[in-house]
Length: 356
Image (cartoon, rainbow, N blue to C red):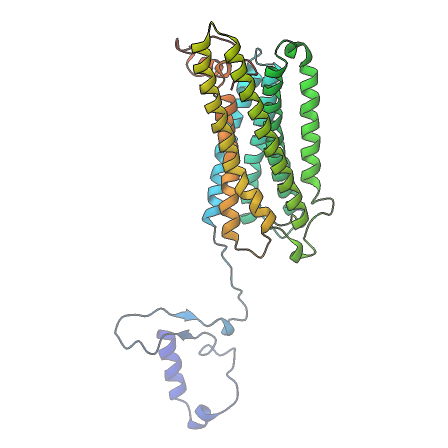
């Protein structure tokens, strides 16, 4: 206000011709280099907000402040939780020499995939708000890591399902046919396929040059997103079929063992319930995102994308609980590492691949 009064006094004290002159104001005059604007309709004595007029400040530039989306914060927090959980699983498997069987190799591969997925979510947040995301290399690196990690996670879950099915279907020959070398070959195949899928945008399958061809997840093209979604639906259908066969085999075994009929019936019912929970959790996490990827594109509201991506990432939060922390051998290792003892109520029976 002091600047406005001073400017008004200087102008009113001048000659009349200077007031009626149509010549522009001198931009170097101290009385006109800055101006303050306020609402003239406000006649109260309370102070009003004043802003510097930007067109009278040729030497300054406005600094844009990027607003952090709460959805991105939620994804970053989820990624942190995923990383901590799966890092714990990897540490237990690495420092426990007895956990080297085929089943634990698959669980370890799943934990590595989910760990990379969690780190990918954290890096995506960093690249979005702390690094210039307009750089193509940063965008392609982020999407390659996320696609590779989540693809490996889904494929490892499928491999664990196949492993459980084979352990029941070929119960007598399973331990001779299912060697550690065979399991490592399967894991290598899973990771080669996953990395290939993740690198497709870097190989040219991206929409950085044509925004109209983008899917809900830029820079993945619509065609690429649909292909990934359809592949997931096929994997989910195969898992449903395998779990259905596992249930049939389990019930058949329960009927064949008449001596232990009551015990097996109870354990079989519990196993089927566990399988149902596993399958429902997996479908509830991934099906919304897969279906939305097929029907939507980049023109759809971004809030719908966040609302389907967040549950999909939560699957990597659930995986360590379902496939690792429920395992008695891993539980014993965790108890020994944390407090140096094993609870007496913890089952001492070795867990097999057929257990659910």
